[in-house]
Image 1 (spheres, rainbow, N blue to C red):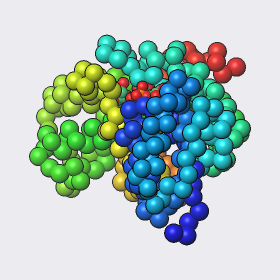
Image 2 (image 1 turned 180 degrees about the horizontal axis):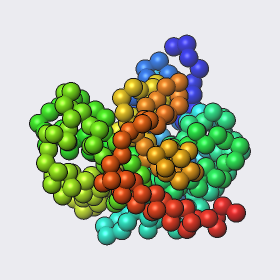
Image 3 (image 1 turned 90 degrees about the vertical axis):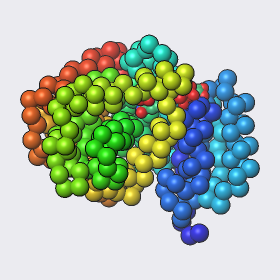
Image 4 (image 1 turned 180 degrees about the vertical axis):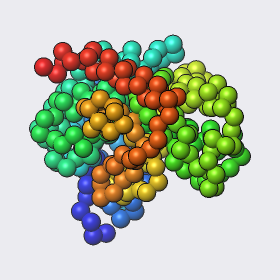
Amino acid sequence: MTKSPVRIAITGGAGQIAYSLVFRIAAGEMLGPEQPVILHLLEMPSAMEALKGVVMELDDCAYPLLQGIVMTDDANIAFTDVDYALLVGAMPRGPGMERSDLLKTNATTFKTQGQALNAHANHNVKILVVGNPANTNAYIAMHSAPDLNHKNFSAMTRLDHNRAVAQLAAKTGVDVNSVHNLAIWGNHSAIQYPDITHAIINGVKATTMVKPSWILDDFIPTVQQRGSMVIKARGKSSAASAAYAIISHMRDWVMGTDEWVSAAIMSNGDYGITEGLIYSFPVTVKDGEFSIVQDLEINDFSRTRMLANQQELEQERDMVAHLLN
Ligand code: NAD
Ligand code: LMR
């Protein structure tokens, strides 16, 4: 093993997503089998005992790639010299709540963590915000870290992307690997826009394979409501599928992909979306940077939904403005 270890911060280390995530990262699933890692696990003081248990289990795996563990309840320690930061730790919603209901509770966490990342992380740190409402929490963290490039920040819509691929593949009776060029636009919320206008299945336009009524009445609401449906069924929000989406998002960000995937990144005005919002776009990745897929034709149906997402994110942005002065 010749590579130097990289440092990966994971917040909410004793939570349910982390329990599906940290073992896979330590096994090399995120950065590959040649890349040693040091895990920095951040928790609330009240969950440090539970975190100790997670660390005992990590030790007990004797992972060849795991070269160290930092366990702390102090963000300034957790983010020191980290190359990657997975901001998972935040309160999840329960039944009957919208993700934006979490904004009040979770917003200050992302301000504090943005400041700590700014002060202590490696300046090339790649940051993925998962804690909800993920887009606006990423916006808060980004604005609290003025010395870090905005390109270092992303929020997760990969789970929505994967859900959409799975639904379309099931409906058309194909393998998930046959579905390409699908997009999630906007906010990781109940009005997100899963878009199959450009999707291709085995060389055929997906829109010729399904009825418009299925797209409108089934596909879009199913993807939008999938998080709620999982909460209703499990009594807890999605965890294993979220962990897999985190690993996929980070692996693609580091290793690159020509495949369209979806990620919420800072809008630079492409497709007319308000600059500065953390908005989900279809992207590809090269040399560690996301590129928004360009020159897509946007029909009126798509435009209306994309604008609704923009407005919702503008409202969330305005709700947290007082925190960022
Ligand atoms: P959980 O309650 O099981 O775990 C969260 C952990 O974070 C807890 O152990 C808690 O003590 C810790 N925590 C809270 N505030 C913290 C802070 N300031 N610093 C460090 N640790 C902190 O929740 P979970 O199921 O793991 O979900 C975590 C978050 O991820 C929730 O907000 C959930 O809604 C969100 N989520 C997002 C997506 C997505 O696609 N973007 C998918 C699933 C879940
Ligand atoms: C999800 O999409 O599963 C997560 O954002 C959890 C939730 O609250 O829906």
